[in-house]
Image 1: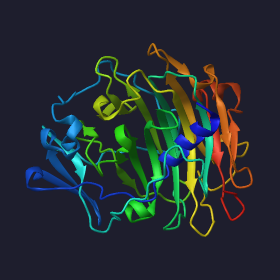
Image 2: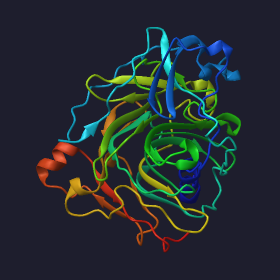
Image 3: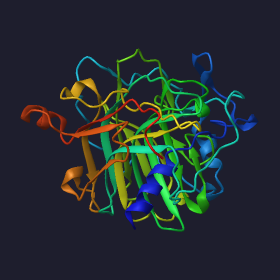
Image 4: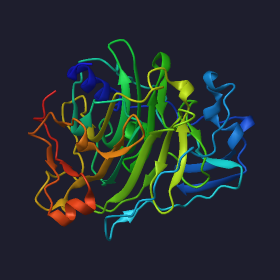
Length: 369
């Protein structure tokens, strides 16, 4: 697969500017309990066997996997004095939290062809490896409040994928600020998939993702003060026995949020060819590119700009390695607007943070296309 194709795969699948309603609801999914997080954000506790993700035609005979076959190691937070993911929801046993639909969300999605070489206004900063097959990727990263226009988007994510000129399978997760999807400018956690026959979506906007935990939804907003980050450590990994693709919040204790069933994909059965982490932005039609990370270029102070740390991958034998132990490519397509600084901390910091990098920048009107 050529570099241009891989770049197009990564860029275009992560830059949907609008989506279908975040979840549909109906009489068969009456909530047992609901949680109103803010004015426009309510989670309904839906019977796990009647959740909307199972309505996908490829999952007609699917049996829910309640937990991964092999648990991941718990992770110690390497950061100090920063917010981490706080649980505010605890649905009753046998139910899972599903974000309620709202008519305020745009329902006409704009999709970009995954292998198109045309990416006007899209920019990416980070690292990746196409030395697969890989069974997973994980990273510890932060999200910051930014001033993002209604027709712009800014992401921090981890991703896996496989594809060719004709077809692509892809999964990503992380933070994004995308007013055209959520109707506001907050930082949200998210998940995205693209599978067989070009089908896929954000979060639970369409059937496919299977939620299993009753405490941590796949999609969640964060109310952040300027300059104060929220941290996540996510793992996307393929189950060794079922071949489902799990997303796990690595914490104390770990939370296996849910998974994208293997039935959704036709190019990921034997792992993913590409893994990566980093930031992505999509400019407005006027040509102005939004900020990325903290909105500032990386500096010598690693804690002063957006960061990815402890970036690791699972190889084809499910062995966990730092991402730089594989052939790795640095991605920075608009140095006028964004920057990338690879692991230049002191020896103690490098040991504590594993492989890490800082990234981001202010964007602007001279970022190119």
